[in-house]
Length: 58
Image 1 (tube, rainbow, N blue to C red):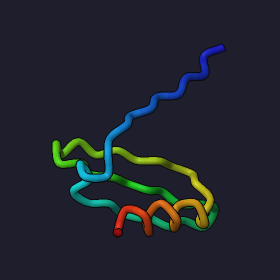
Image 2: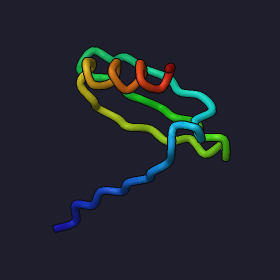
Image 3: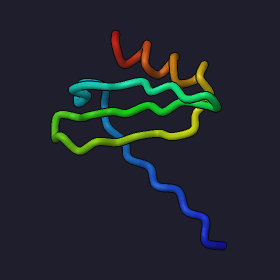
């Protein structure tokens, strides 16, 4: 049907930095692993993004 989803898994110890970007209708969560390849999750509800960000900061 032309719809695809790509998943990239990594453990939290590999996370070098993360960012939370807020928009009017949702938010974006960006992760920068130690290999310096930026990953992002777009159009998430704000509550889910804040939960991800909180876990990443621990």
